[in-house]
Amino acid sequence: MTTLANIFRRHGSEYLNRYGKQILPSHRKVIRDVILCRTKHLGGCTWFCEHCKEYHYSYHSCKNRSCPQCQNEQADVWLGKQQDNLLPVEYFMATFTLPEGLRRVTRSNQKTVYNIFFQASAQALRKLSLDPKYLGGKIGMVGVLQTWTRSLDYHPHIHYLIPGGALSLDGKKWISAKNTFLMHHKPLSIIFRAKVKDALKKSGLFKQVSPQVWQQNWVVHIEPVGNGHAVLKYIAPYIFRIAISNRNILGCKDGQVTFRYKDSDAGQFKTMTLNAMEFIRRYLQHVLPRGFQKVRYYGFLMSKKKKQLAEIKHLLSVQEVKTEKTAEKEFIFICPKCGRNMILIEQSNRMRGPPLEEILFHRKLRETA
Image 1 (cartoon, rainbow, N blue to C red):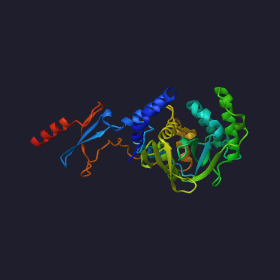
Image 2 (cartoon, one colour):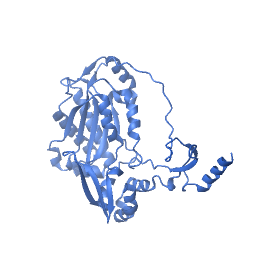
Image 3 (cartoon, rainbow, N blue to C red):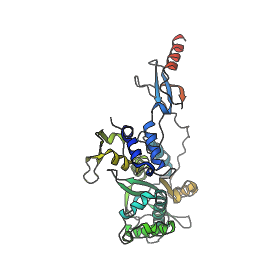
Image 4 (cartoon, one colour):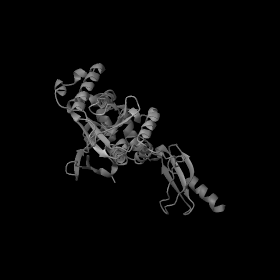
């Protein structure tokens, strides 16, 4: 099976040599982390199966958010934590996309422009929601940044998950959205464009943008997406998904990488083959700046607004179900032979492979016990 780590091992040094100082530190770190992930260089754990009397060794993961091996379980954890915030209302998905003319300056100034992107789109939604013609109140929302298309092209956009309604300005009434309508996308687009323009002027990046960008229509979509449970399951993968998963990489041969992607129009899988240098470049352009927060919460869905969310639930007659909080599940390694839980014998962060001598030592102790 061809993986991203395989591609980096074969062609990563060539990429680093070719582009040298142009490569961001965060990109270098991803290449290194992905190559070392689940190898002896990161240490690991020794496990013992009491049923099979066998020892097994599992390597530690790199935990880099751009590594395809390290994000599989994160979406389920996030999904579980969001259940308490659900409201019994229609939910909406608003998607804001940066126009093509802004992408070059965005790619070169990611942290600055991504923050502007979040601020401008969120402010546009909140401003329009205050208009009595739509809701006339304060909304809550969760925003998720995504930068790629399915073919790994650069296409920065933000998905917002929004409960269908708003809290009145005095905080005493819940204002429900009208049927399957929240607000018009056209005024939302105009406000969004104006706020990005103003922010870029303050940032000093405005002169790098073509004047034509401000004359065109900006793409904003907003649509109903059903109840809270359905939409959480829809949005959760976007939060922790990376540009491509290992299962979609089909091969790497003669300096060419072949991968598959699902065509959004036809709904069918297609394949694409790229030069390894181009494949790595496309992948790394989606690595976010260090410490950048790609998921953001606004209004009554912010963590500091828990009291306000509780008041909304009361207004909507939502009955809180108190459940006993349990400690987080400890990671258990399953025996590959019999499928039973194994016992953790040792954990180490030292750079080494499976400790064969120690395994034999533990085995001898158990045999003589």
